[in-house]
Every structure is written in C-alpha cells, then in structure tokens.
Length: 159
Ligand code: HEC
Image (cartoon, rainbow, N blue to C red; front, top):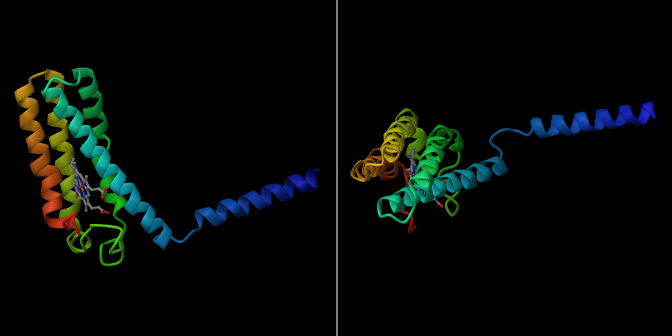
C-alpha cells in the first residue's frame, strides 16, 4: 500500500512539474492569451452597455453599480494578456493586436492605468445617480481608455 501511494505521489508530482514547467510563450499559451484578452475586451464593452442603459432608464442603478465595480477589476489584467509574440504578424487571422504594442510597451501599459482612473470616476458618477455625470464619464472612459488604445494599437476590426 505504502509503495503504491508513494508511486502515486511521485507520479502526480511529476505531472504537476510537467504542467508548471510548460515553456512560457508556447503557441498554446499565446492563443490562450489572445482568446482571454478578447473575452475581457468584450466583457468591458458589455458592462459599458449596461451602464449606458441605466442612463436611458432601462437598467436599475444597483445593476449599473455592480457593472461599474466589475469594470474596475479588468484594466489591471490587460497588460498581462499581451505576451510578446502575439501580434497580428504572428497570428494574422486570430488577433487585431498591432506590433506597435511591443515596440511601444511603456506607452501601451499606461493606457489601462488611465482607463482604470476614468472608470473610477464613472463608478462614482453611477453611485451619485447623476445621469449627466454618468454620460460625461462614459464619454471619458471611451476616449481616454478604450479609444486611446484602439487608435494606436488595434488594427481595424473589419480586417
Ligand atoms: C491598453 C489597450 C486597450 C485598452 C485600454 C482597451 N482595449 Fe479593447 N482592444 C485592444 C486590442 C489590442 C484589441 C485587439 C485584441 C486582439 O484581437 O487580440 C482590442 C479588442 C477589443 C474588442 C474586440 C474583441 C474581440 O472579440 O475581438 C472590443 C469589443 C474592445 N477591445 C473593447 C474595449 C473597450 C470597451 C475598452 C474600454 C473599456 C477597451 N477595449 C480598452 C486594446 C485595448
């Protein structure tokens, strides 16, 4: 018994070691990161849409607050989902990420920080219930966050 348990432990330890030792930056990791960042981007767009529908009266403030809080958790994850070697040069069909992202990495990684700040203001506006402020902050998020990055770093989606 003891022998088998030991062998099982060794086998599972090897299994874990193999998983943990998978070379970073492998093709699978890269397509995984591409899919994950696209899903995160879509989630951002969905959350903003719900907040917009609060302004037009179709969604409760509670729901809009929940979405604003959810949005705040996303920008800190963005840069980590852009590992090197995942531009539309390496993966022409799978991604719209331009090589400029890695050529201007310092600039790229500042944009999620600006986005996070704008979303903080958006969350405060939603909590205040002042809809004109919510509209202004939505505009600010779109310009200084989403738009600022897409203009330089995302290839046109129709490609
Ligand atoms: C730091 C840069 C950056 C910021 C900030 C950013 N995006 Fe993006 N976004 C990208 C890039 C690059 C892509 C292309 C990703 C890909 O295809 O791998 C993208 C793709 C998308 C897509 C298409 C996803 C798909 O399914 O292919 C949507 C929708 C989107 N972004 C919405 C948003 C919204 C909404 C915001 C603001 C709340 C935002 N993005 C903020 C860089 C950014």
